[in-house]
Amino acid sequence: MGSVSIFAGSVLRSAMAGIKEPHKVLPFIGLIFAPGFSSEIVKELNERLGDVILKSDEVPFTHTTYYSKEMGLDLLRQWWAFGNLVLPDILAKLKLKTNEIEQRFLNDKGGRRVNIDPGLLSLSNLVLASTKNYAHRIYLGQGIYAEVTLLYKEHHFVPLEWTYPDYREDVALDFFNRARDVLRKRLVEENRALRE
Image 1 (cartoon, rainbow, N blue to C red):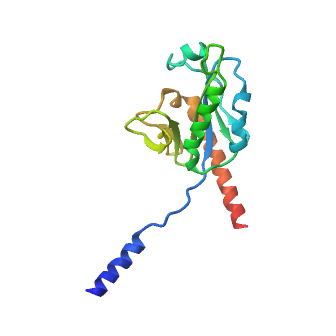
Image 2: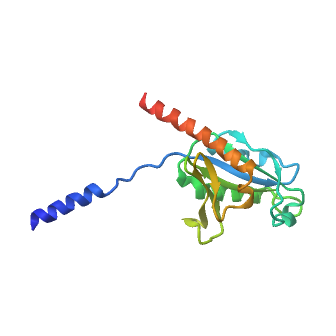
Image 3: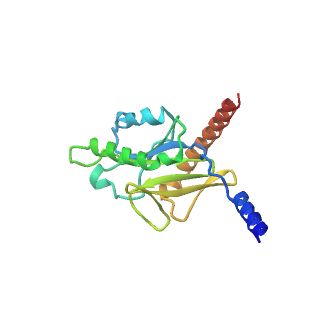
């Protein structure tokens, strides 16, 4: 009986996966803003995330009027990717930081000048942070939830049932596919440097 329990314990230990550090990811922000927006507002993100290395085209934000009363009309949408690769556990802190920035730079009516949505891009998916809970979101702590918004399948990012309409558009999908290429090359470079 003792030999059976020893064997079972050995099998159990070998079957348990060891905890490994996750791969680094590429941080980005989605911006919604009125014409005349100054990029100086988000400059302090460069201290942690590095320089902006990739920007999407600016496109009209027409999917909802949710932000119009606070931010005005003729809003624009754009995505920026940053140069420093980070570990995924930064997401909640990043969302708290962008919320703080939004509240420090208000317009003359007391509304936000810019809406800043941070996210993380990996080789397999794109994850957004939110302060709102829904059935498909996971609580990270400090009032912040994570949502997988895009999956990488068959050589490109694809939307999910709950993906926001602007993240389904070609301008967004093209940007994130290009950002993934940047991430893939950076990870290869970092792995090569570790081996040398």
